[in-house]
Image (cartoon, rainbow over all chains, first blue to last red; front, side, top):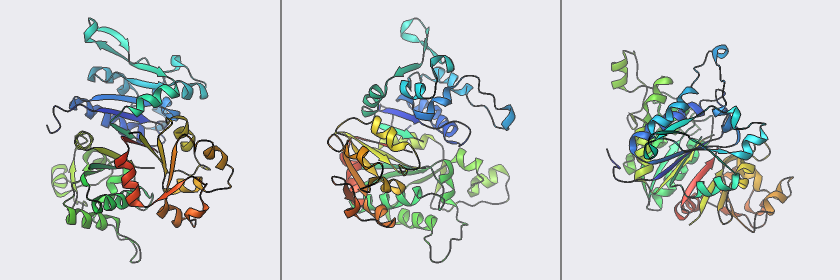
Length: 138
Length: 130
Length: 102
């Protein structure tokens, strides 16, 4: 496909609570497609975006599809850099224990199972964002 | 320089599509290239050819169509987002067995890969949304 | 080259400006468009917060959006520059990448 051979740093910045609006779901759909392009893809969960990774989501009572299991599949697509902003978690009374377990198998380390979640401070994330070529936010 | 523009909001409800249009026009006037305009989320509704805005208001779809015609713009409507919201071109109407289509011929329907490709091929990708 | 941050929400309604201010490096540029232009008007409850950042970051306002809401560049906090759409395009081209704080 066009664009082959070029690798850019893509970051998908998620800042919204899921279900109230479609942004979290439709952003995830772009992320999945981007896996096919062999780019350097990462996700950032900032502000209310951290709620997208909250464990125990159950949508039976609202008649909407629970798409949170899709985040667990990202590792299989070689998308394994999920930056979660520490301050955003803390402001919301959350810790890593409140998030889904998201892992990938590291082919460079005998397929050891590793966490895809990278806890970063606001300052560290600002540095990572600064280094991106393409930021897609919703 | 080459730009790809991503729009996430529908017409009239939110200024995003207007801002994106003004930006695209200014970029072209300055001699830049628009590699692609990608309509995602509710922005797929910008592509309807059936809207009837009041006479004294702008017609957002027609504005885009005219800009596209003058500058040979590639305007892509996300197929997944469009199907969800009942936006169909003739091919999709036939393929899905529906009784109508509504997408203006200046736009084309395609997959999300077109957005990622826009990010790869362009010098800058800029998002207009809510 | 540094990063361009775009904010489009009124600071009085939503927290996107705060998010942007906290997550932008010094030397980066911040552009207010759409409803966010009211955030850059002088003598409001938030002016001081922006003034405190003026020495480390560059602030811009999309003047057509400002004018649409009944203000002119003369109403801006001193040090914030008004730009037209051509200037907006220049900001996107002259910075290395763009983040829209939606």
